[in-house]
Image (cartoon, rainbow, N blue to C red; front, side):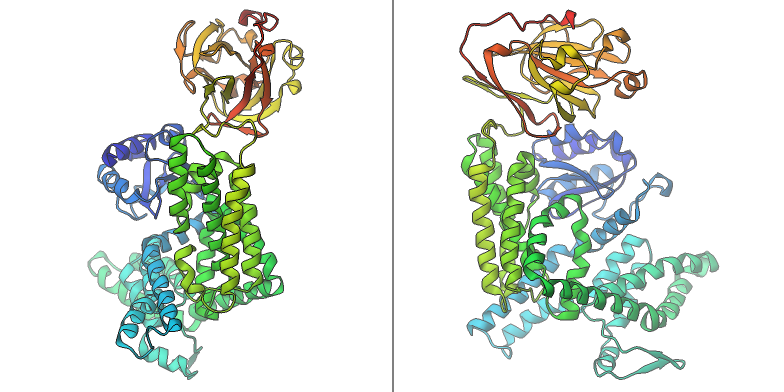
Length: 628
């Protein structure tokens, strides 16, 4: 794959470099904060080879690439002048306003993303060392064990320093002053004093003896407080001495303030969170496991999973273990199972390849390709994976499994789950994976779903025809539209869609059979003889073409998903007209027609499935477009 070409196309799709406030990447996604989301062409980006999907959530425009994301980001960064960070704000006034939750999620993801891979590796190393000890292959006094343990545990011991650096970068304050503040929290002399419960004072103000090694919340709060003090000091000191005196007074102020107030407050918050989660978990561990197993991947989709990261790390720092991580591994593995079910059932080579590769990456903890490329796209497999995750999570939770170190939830994390409840984790993982596979294979596709389609686009095989949605929106039964002719199915059977987009596209490949002069209706005959009528709005013929722009001509060949008509949905509605789009099969007697059970439609979803009746063509339903 030419990553530079893909990067150029993505950059064009998001509206060019001038529409980017910030841009960076994580393990699988390009993440942007755009000046104007409406300038981004999501459909264009999703159609690019190499792009799994696009997610616009938590204040970020996310392009899901998969494992090759770094290869795409490198030329993209060069083209757009980006670094893998979120500190390239062009102008504060250009930043979109975000609610508090989105700001929190963006902050946490910005703090943890840069070192997530290293943190996962360090956690797995600690787990492997625990396994080697249990097998008797190493001892705690051996040099190999001590060196490797220092590498793995050192990351978490000095975690406040890493967090200070990334948090300061995210909050636009002096990173090295923040790091100096963090080093004070884990300074050996102070650690020794607090570790022995000794007390010290700062000008007779007592300092609460608290250990900050491996902690998360205290340093994040400290840097947040620092972000308010630094601007005041910058204004106070002249530019000639600011670079020295601002850091000096930040340390003079923040070190005692953190040790006396902010640090203990953060530690108390962390203790409350850990104790609260432990209390809930201990009260009904199986229920907690079922809920997290079912909904974890939903949290991932909306980006809110980041809010759990500091909580889980805080649990390990305060309690010495975390009860959530094993359950999350079960949820991850259930998606891998569902992807395997699709792999086994799919006939299309591209879908089979995508599903197969997604199984491997999901088992290793990267579920985005499986979710966005396979299970969520097909809908039912995602739901069945959630059910499988709930059952497997209940088993793991019921066994009170826990993780001794933080790492990405996956099969690689198994060594970190050694100890109490380890067997329940193994059983939960096996059940979730097996159920995800079997349920998806048996029930993951409705009887009318053509699993040979990769992206929902229309296929016409012998005796079978699938019609995709001509417009995004909410699907309603044809009988519910406010037009007697269509509601009575006098023109033929079909569906109606209350649109949420302003472009009507070809629902099937074929030839334009009719174009109404006012642009509100189009007729298409497919390559296999399916006659489709698209009617935009009710009584919109009275607009005499106003707010409609026809993009095709009669007898023109069109391919599925090709734009046919642009219409101003809002203007039509403001003019007092119903904008519902009707899709009618005008030669209905030739087919047995089934309708999707989905309530929402996009131009990648099928909405009608037609099966040939093998009868002579009837003229009863060949209503001419000019009569509607």
